[in-house]
Image 1 (cartoon, protein in one colour):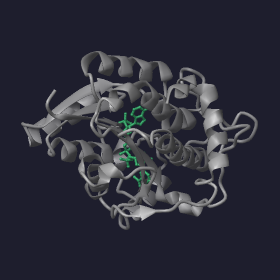
Image 2: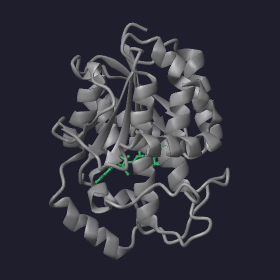
Image 3: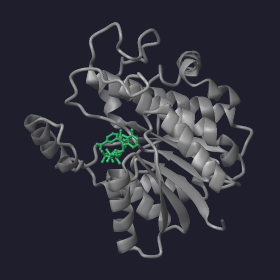
Image 4: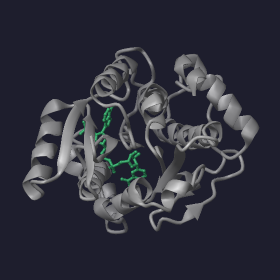
Length: 292
Ligand SMILES: NC(=O)c1ccc[n+]([C@@H]2O[C@H](COP(=O)([O-])OP(=O)(O)OC[C@H]3O[C@@H](n4cnc5c(N)ncnc54)[C@H](OP(=O)(O)O)[C@@H]3O)[C@@H](O)[C@H]2O)c1
């Protein structure tokens, strides 16, 4: 394929969908990696209606289920010989959740979807990224982490098996792990043409009608919050910058905010010893990272 190829996970809504529209507008072929066929098709059709020349395609993946991630990686690999940009946008963040939920494979859902799935997909598609002139891995974290300066990845119990479940900690732990993974993978790949960077997403408007699981109180909270939030389209500009900008393709191992500016995380997240510990823990779930 002549066009550059980009995968965006969680592409049927919110920032991911806006990023697909923008990146497809930069003459990319964009694969919308979605977990639900009906929602994925509706989003793809909507994008095609708005821009009939957009080169977009749907692939089905549940990022929390490693078997599903493997199937999607196989499907992609049998169809394409190269991947230029991989954006790990999909995430669960149902803050109303009171109890730990396990995926069909028995892994705590935040840990599986927001951290393990992206690590596995990166590992499985690395050979294709290496075929690109300038492969790019883009992970997604959260500015909300600033309110959790002492939170760490629980190396003994990341799945809340032996302590009471805390949804906020489960979510932010997974986002810390993604930042650490970004540093780790950028270091591993520093002698290749592949870059790895993370986006620290700020407060972005959420379509609460997509989240029937939210309590009325949480819907009200999100409504108030959205008055101080930017639009998904505005946030997607940073995804597009890191995916498409020539200069951004020379930068690796950095974290960017919504103004495309580099930001620094706290010392723990950037500590090489701590990063190695988190990646050793990750390796127990995803042995494929040995290949990176
Ligand atoms: N919005 C904010 O204020 C904010 C703040 C900080 C960070 N972020 C991060 O920004 C990213 C995008 O958030 P958003 O605001 O655009 O959220 P959103 O509107 O809820 O979109 C999330 C997308 O991820 C998909 N998804 C969820 N679980 C999945 C799974 N297991 N497999 C595949 N896809 C899955 C959803 O698909 P379904 O339609 O199937 O659910 C949806 O397409 C996330 O990584 C989030 O953590 C957002």
